[in-house]
Length: 459
View 1 (cartoon, rainbow, N blue to C red):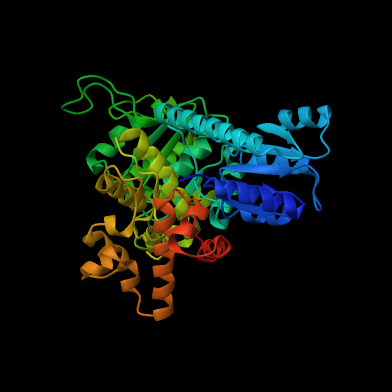
View 2 (tube, rainbow, N blue to C red):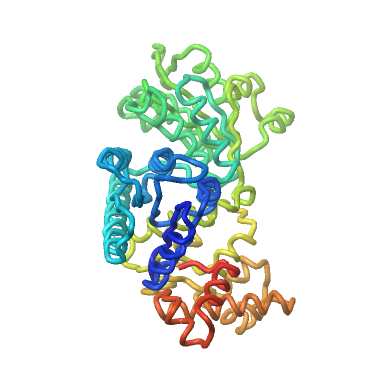
């Protein structure tokens, strides 16, 4: 199965020829006459490579190239132009184009350059994955409006030393937001210290936060620095702040007010320069009303509140998250899984994900293990209990698991699902070679291309 390639050229005949060449070679291809349509489509889907003409009806090709390399640097761009000069070729390469091909186009040159561009992009991606594995890359995945707004808030507050309070359900990624704030701040080269208030017993929390002197309690055989001292110059992330005891809250308030701490068993104040980021999955105002959270501490922490959306409120990000998790597991496990079939993604999109991103990641990991050596996970690969969970059902018929159209009661929807699955399987068998598949199943190539577009089929 080959990659998806897009063509942006204001000459329709050029678009048609290029698309035909690519499809005959097994690529999934799409063409655009207008730059605005091309850029709009990019927000919802990303190709593996782009052929770009420099002379466009509604935009400057160089500006489109610059935009592509800024926003989507991982996509190789091959310039095609009938008005090429040495100056324009040099400029395009400097802007990040992979290569420059002059019109009239050579069939062999087009395919060879594309093959080289995809290999180069694949190596670049592999390098990024290895660097991420070694360095622990932290990023906010997705292109939904909710995630874009979240990125804006992170960028707005990161450079300031303002205290931040992050709200969100369990599993939404509050720690990721905290780390991104730290990594984009002037404290990025200093420590980032995380404290999970819910995971540490109440009797030990103060010792963990503020440290202790030798002899402070029975087992204190030597002095120990607390998390605030360890975070000096950097950032301390207080997760699940709503679970902190009132005693620890009072001492935390003092630290925020005076910028100093005292170790347990000590009498000397220790100055600390620390940025505080806190997070909670609870309603702190409700806890204040119940007398379980200090109101004065709440106002100290709630200087710049950030709410992380639940996964059910940004479901359009699920395909991007799945792709990221599959790439991550590919580095950790001896498995070949590269993608989830459309019907599995559809199942994911219709589930509410109460455990949010953490639940999605755990589910993908489970499926990768079940899939073994398969490159694509289909509905038939899912264990019955997982399908029942995702569908919110307690019983599952065998035919439901094997043939997804049997799960639909509406005849027209079932027919469409069968058509999609049938064509997808036939195309897979022929490595997405449209011409060969059309011949084998007895329909015209043009009609098959129409059905592929209509049913939203992709390699």
